[in-house]
Length: 102
Image (tube, rainbow, N blue to C red):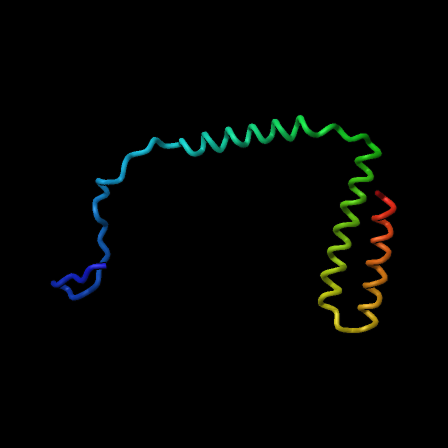
């Protein structure tokens, strides 16, 4: 910041950037693209295709986990003892269903 003596106001001035080396544009993005391509190759080769039954089971498990996280959030916010009891019982039911899927 610099105070201009003529106007007595503070002003911002940009100093010349002669001492900053020039860098080729896009060198970072090329590296990122290469890393992303390598990761997608690794994960694609590491995963085997799921059968239809395994897909259904995985989808059901994800749904149960989502419902469980929702119930947990509700339980943290609940203040009524009856509501908390209902949520706790629902969590126990979900946990039982999740354990039967594994």
